[in-house]
Length: 244
Length: 245
Image (cartoon, rainbow over all chains, first blue to last red; front, side, top):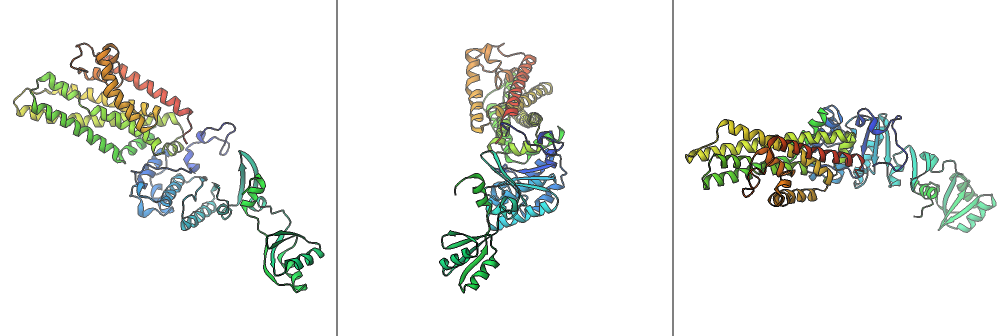
């Protein structure tokens, strides 16, 4: 697609200005498609020829994505997960420095999602920059190091996962007690602010250890105690003002 | 450019569409020639016309139109251009590849019908075409195959939708151009799928149309090249400015 404004560059160059672009940037688009009558191997042979990659890479990337057994089957017989693997193989064909994946876990079953997560980690460990675009924030949060939040075409936040999740916020603890009223009173007497979330108390500026100690001093039974974890989804809603 | 051309030729060879349409072209052409030569008496002129006007060329046009529109139908155009972002070179490689495919299909079709016709006509004790006449029909058929192969790419890239393109070509080749030749032969002979190719083949577009209607082969070739160039240029301009997804 052509941008209505702005530009995207790789090492200062537009994609179509790169020498052998598919060897610098590998991309999987959300609607990665294949000719249904062509086998996986032939699909990759065509792309290898088009992109100027060594023919030997075809079998290498097919092995990387675990499609060796199905290389000669026509793509129309592939499951969604197999197609997604083939799309990844296409992107890896040129052994690129940058990998761009749009919604890579779409349609994958749990083992497929786990495989994809592992693959992304491996590609990153091999020195590639991996850019994942996704709306499945809980899944993304398990794999990424850095996050860019874009909403309505605007950059809302960028930084490490911890920074975007609010790593600089005051610590907080979620606690469930047998007698929430007495525990609230005890915590407030010691200067802690409390927010109620259903039958759960969120204690601001206190670690779980500190909350546990206070409960023990007051001989109060605690049913659950954990540090508050902000999810990427919650961070997204907070950053964009969107509602669940 | 060479690797793009090789890639396009590999695309052609790795699906069943090419084989199916080439087989269809051979089968339809053979059927027509076998029935005509078996059931009626043919002299040298009518035999030449029969060999030169086989339906093989129509299959070439359909093959290339299906080939280029398949990139949009199966949404493979984006991955093709990701691998080769220069859209003009990609379109040029595809055009050359399908021109070569047109030559290959025309060669197989023309050789097949020449062998079949010669065997049948000889067996009936009638006059067959000499080698020079056969060679003349062959090169004209190969030229038309190449030009229609290239034309189909340009038209397909302009329309993009496979069903619309194939339907449009069928209407153009089977209805519009023949009608135009009948009603306004001075215009119809310049047509891209029937008129100008008939001039190159030097066979009457329609037996009921007066002799001399056809363009001279050289002019017909120039007109056909003009059609190919015009559709290529239009398709290239459109492809350069289009979003692909």
